[in-house]
Amino acid sequence: MSLHNLKSKAGRSHKLRKDIGRGNGSGHGTFSGRGGKGQTARTGGTRRPGFAGGQTPFFRKMPKLHGFKNPNQINYQVVNVGELNIFDDNSEVNSESLKAKGLVSKTTQPVKLLGDGELTKTLTITVNKSSKSALAKVEAKKGKVNLI
Image (cartoon, rainbow, N blue to C red; front, side):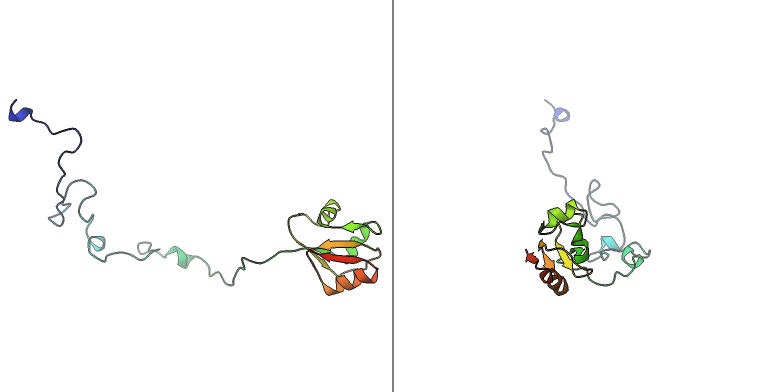
């Protein structure tokens, strides 16, 4: 065995020293030193989030979005009292029967009863919410409104 036949073990048996700050591109490999020159090579040299290299930043290009969107807002499906005359007298009205007649589009979304129109039938209505005028019109016809 001679010196020119000696080899290190498989893998990296000795770690390369990292030379930082000793000339252009100091150190070994791509991930050594401090990268390029200039602002990013200096300590504390960072740009603010959203910086676009001198162009108009994206957040300044966007229009101003005014107002507030309430995440807890409940959107009711509205049914007026006058529309309920398509049901038979003394029948049970709920979200399923309203969907079957095409007055609401979803059974999962809450329903609110409003007082527009005239009611001619006696009905038992089960809804999530009701206006005072709708409640008065249903009770005037001897009907009943059950609130869920």
